[in-house]
Length: 451
Image 1 (cartoon, rainbow, N blue to C red):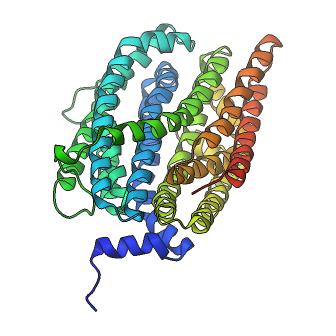
Image 2: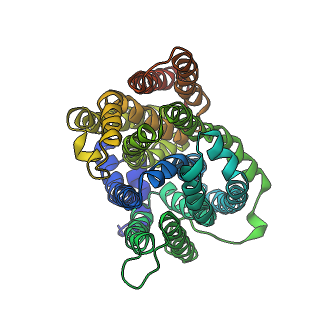
């Protein structure tokens, strides 16, 4: 019996490998790579903290918009691409998988260019409506206008990574994005602070670094997918391209995009409420909420590992295995992210003191983490089950469950503003909303029909 090729071994592992060990094996490269997100976030916040409080406030306003680009491209459309490719492979239809990959590439390129233009055009309106004014608004626009050049590259890099992940290839996108993260730290520090021969460009320099490294990452992934090494690559064979696949991806992806939109809408609502308490509280909240965004890579690492496993099982009509994968991955994320949340509650200074020495800013960040940290495990559970549901091609119910978080923040925030609530009350509202989202998502997955 001849030895199986690497692609055949991956396919067999996705189809019938032990659930937990396969999940861990696929998660580790993603976790290492996306760990660079933590390094980038820490480094960027540290750079910006050196620039001043106005810069911290400005990046607190702009950061959710650019985190949304990552979540839409990697989580919503990217997860939809991975799920569709894995289901096609699970059903034994490789030609369909190639056509889906090409369709996903076209969607990502188009959306990246359009959204970059919208951010440049409507940036002043967005940040102004969030409470930005004066120096804080100027800093937000300086970051946003420069970082907008990175948006098409972010979409392309994440879509190309998702094509590879759909066939179980995790190491190539993981290595590429890890190198991009390291490069972003080095270049961002050099351009932001004017280290060595580089000009001091301030917060704009930090954003320019993001554009440089993501365009490089997109180029590397594109060239790899054009070789014969991956099981599913980019073949510009237009005779096999079908508009129906674009429609199918957009149908599921359009619904899936509501999840990151709701997540960022929740953060923007909270940002707008917190901004009413002054720039120091806003800056402190911005430091605290960046830790919350760092939980997303953990859920993402496990979720995108579960996604092709679920998709392959669904494609092979093995629904019981698909559900086992979903619950196993959800439990892993709930425990891991919950432990981080508990650490934030007990020792918030380990995170906050990295970024500021300003006492009022520190106090606000401590307050946020010691309250919101209790909801982190539920937040991670909801995100992981969202990815598992993408593998099954069933995201509508999960989106409905996640909308509860935004609804609670919207209604509760209006009440707190009307009744002169405190920042602590707003932070407690955030924690409750995360817990409700996690519980509701688990119930939806339990009751939904897959297959």
